[in-house]
Image (cartoon, rainbow, N blue to C red; front, side, top):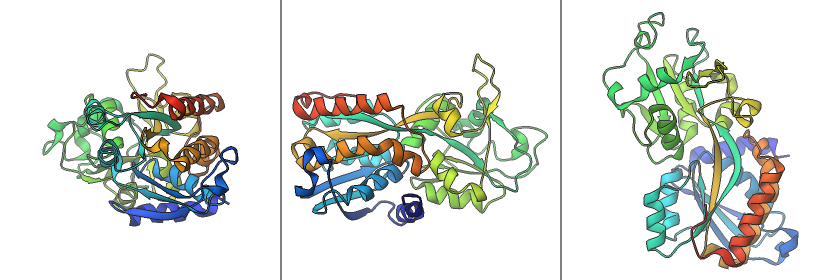
Length: 331
């Protein structure tokens, strides 16, 4: 049933960059009496986490028809700005909250809990007609993406001499995206540090469209967006030369992301819930429902589920926060 809705989720995300998609969604875990709930839940943030949250909201509709869930896509950074100002209840995040955001939340009297919901593998992709890139190293990715590369590393043969003397066209996450922060820290060595002369977007669908129509392209985005569009993209195996196990070039997959061998581009995905939000019964109910179903739904939309014991831990963590622990920031 969820598979049939995946294309709908993708199209929705593409249409709503920087805007909100309002859904009348039903809220509730049967333990909370979800069918009697009403009210609203405001969610925004990462386009990477969006498909999981949207799938949860779709399933939640059958539980509490009177709860209105609004899910927006403004990137992790954009969502965090709203969250730390108290404008939304939940933020989708493809990275952890940074120190500046935590400070803003504290200044606004907002404490929060960070909940892991799935794993992702940032996927390096090229056009299917690209027949020269069989793999790429972390050092080569750094050479392409570091700030010093701007205006200097412009052609494929500057990466490897045997690659063609043709322009390289780069596509990557926008600077408000948690994917951008994670990629730059993992590859360049410093978060929020990269060249600026590339096609950037907080919407992964825009990047998919760019790479899939450009034979000279190289880009990166979340694994689910590759999985959904693999017929028109080619994933590039990444060789982490610093891996002491000497595993060589590894393709992202459900298995290699889950076991950590796809390094250094495997990462957890999060939602954050605010202390103000847990005063609303519909938010508590929705988050409990989310954690009960995140494993199955993350797989349905192309991500990697956490081990079941970790979902239990996340639920216990949230319940402690919601019932009396909402007095301090908890990550």
